[in-house]
Amino acid sequence: MSNEELGKTPKKFKRRIRWGRLLLFIIISIALVAGSFFLGRMAFRILFAPKVPVVAATEDIGTDEILNKRINVLLLGIDDGDSEDFGTDAHKRTDAMMVVSFDTEHNEVSILSIPRDTRVSIPGHRAPDKINAAYAYGGINLAKQTVANLLQIPIHYYILANWQGFIQVMDILGGVDLYVDHNMNYEDPYANLKIHLQQGFQHLDGEKAGEYVRFRHDELGDIGRVQRQQKFFKALASEFFSVGNVVKIPSIAGALAKNVETDMDTLTMIRAANSFKLFGGERVQSEMIYGDFKTIDGLSYWVTSPKQVTKSLDELKIPHRKIEKI
Image (cartoon, rainbow, N blue to C red; front, side):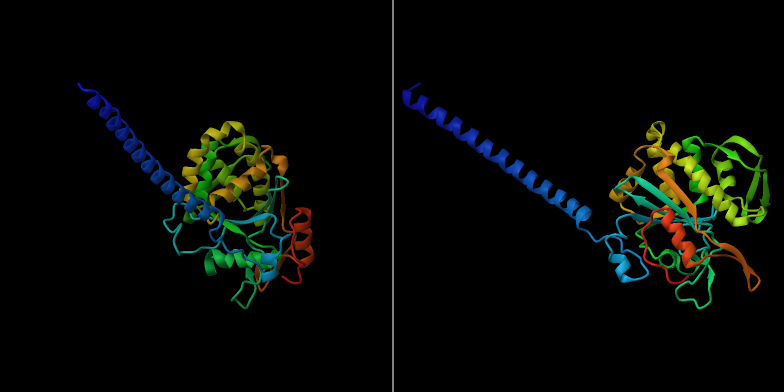
C-alpha cells in the first residue's frame, strides 16, 4: 500500500466520526428542546394557570391579603348511600357542612361545623331557609356563596363527599378507637340506615364509624351529631396521619376518587396536608358555630347572630370581615 493511500485513510475515518458526533448532537438538542417545551408547559399550568375563583361576600374580601393567607375549604357531606346520583346534577340537601381552614404558615387546622338547620339567607331566595338547602337549590356555587356570606370569609375550594367513601376510607385505615357516650339505636328503612351502638369505649370500623357520625336522634338532634362529628374527626386526625398509614395512601386515594369531588389542585392539597406534619390531633381546633334552638313558623332552626359568628371564628383564629347581619 502506498504512502498516499495510507495518508487518505485517516481523513475518511475522521470525517465519519465528525458526522456521527454531529448527528448525536442534533438528536440530543431536539430532545432537550422538546423536554424543555413540555416541562415549560407543565410549569406554566402549575404556576401561572388561572386558579379557582375565590368566592366571597364582597370583592374586597376576595382580594384581601390577610383574609386569604389561610386556605378555607368548604366540606360538604351528602347522605346518598349507594345512589347513582352522586356526581350528577341531581343535587340534594347536604347532610354535613364544615369549613376547614388551613394555616399553612403555622401548621394548624381549624374546623368550624355549621349545623344543617342553621337559618340563613340564601342568595336568590327571599325567605330565610336552612343552610343545607343551598346545595339543593344551586349546587356547589350557591353553597359556597351562602357560607361565604354567612361567615364573611373567602371560600377557596370545596370537597363534596358521600358517606360510602367515608366508610371505605375508615375500613382502609383500620377504624378508630372512641368512647361512645350513650346507646344509639335508630332505623330508617327508606334511607337504608340502621344504627345500633352501645355506650362505652370501643373500636369503630367503617360501618360503625358511619353510624356514629350520622346519628342525630336524641335530645340534641343535629347539634349532638355535630358535636360527635367534631370529636370523631379530632380522633381521626391522629390516626390518618400516623406513620403506619402512609403505605395506605394509594388505597385511600382510590376510594376518595370514587366518592369525592373537589376543585383543589394537587399542590394545594399538599400544602394543606402539610399543616398536619407533626402528626397530632393537637394541631386541630374545632368548634360548632354558636347559636340557639328556635322554632319559627312551625320549623325548628339553629339561629345564630353576628356576635355569635364572630365569637366562633375568633376562637378558631380564622380571620374575617366584620359581620353586619345574618
